[in-house]
Length: 224
Image (cartoon, rainbow, N blue to C red; front, side, top):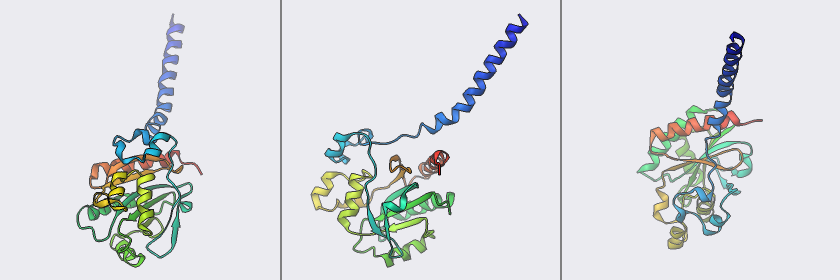
């Protein structure tokens, strides 16, 4: 009888230990991979992409950074990054968002596995020179936080077809995105495989804290 009880205790202990070994991996897998079918607002999705449904990846791109250098999706291979859209003349939510993005930079400062991309929606005004001044004001690490400008059409198409931040109807209104798009408050988390892993309100400190925690989860799974 005592031997049976001893065996039961050993068995239960083994189950408990196994549970706590496996549990962290289960938490890691809870971070979603977001595809077109998962977006609640279906009208932000290009109809062609909505038909594809799954397997979405951020498309290729090439823009100019605050130092006047070309920066492309090729520079992001194997990296985790956060993307947002802003413009230097914005006096409403953009300064708040960029202050929140400073927290993200601080949390991962100098980590070469992490990048931050801030795309301008007003490239006619936001020249590399102006972006450089703005990046200094934001105390941005030039190697880690890129402020990007280029052709407006390309910037907006990337937002619409890759990051799902712009409604197709807004593009149809003006041909370049409409005023609503300029004030998007979203931060988008992208993993090393070019997949969307989350959207966060860049004006909400609690959501930005969640973003930082989710980035740590991705880093734990990142292998070099």
